[in-house]
Length: 136
Image (cartoon, rainbow, N blue to C red; front, side):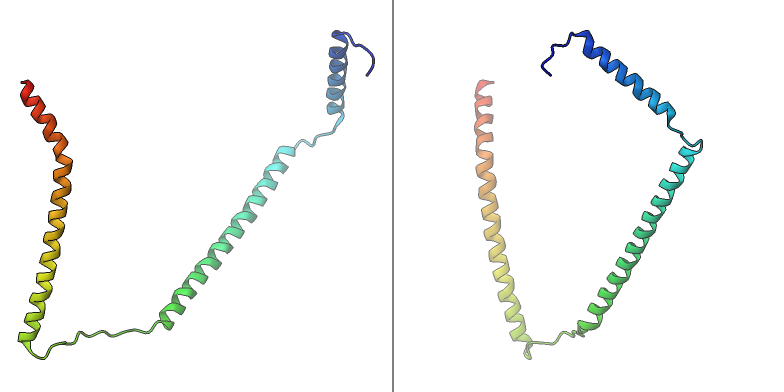
């Protein structure tokens, strides 16, 4: 560490180290069918994952069907049949007219409110158009 190295000396050390690594790599025996063995292993592992995913999907489907069946059995079926609430047709007519009057009042109120909003939004446009008419 305390020694000063010339610029070429570290490069030489690096070159020697790389050449020794290449020589060591050549000494390692590599089976001829290594890529085929790797391919088989990958295929086998992917097959296991697919099998697990199918199992999970099957279990989820069965659980969902069971939950739906349980809800269908637990919730009572309500056979709703509309019943008359008024014995007197004139009274029923009067109540319907009241309900329609309330509905009409609220509808008109909403239209007036909407008209106010639209008019406020159009005012700046009208001013610009008036200025444009004055110019021409």
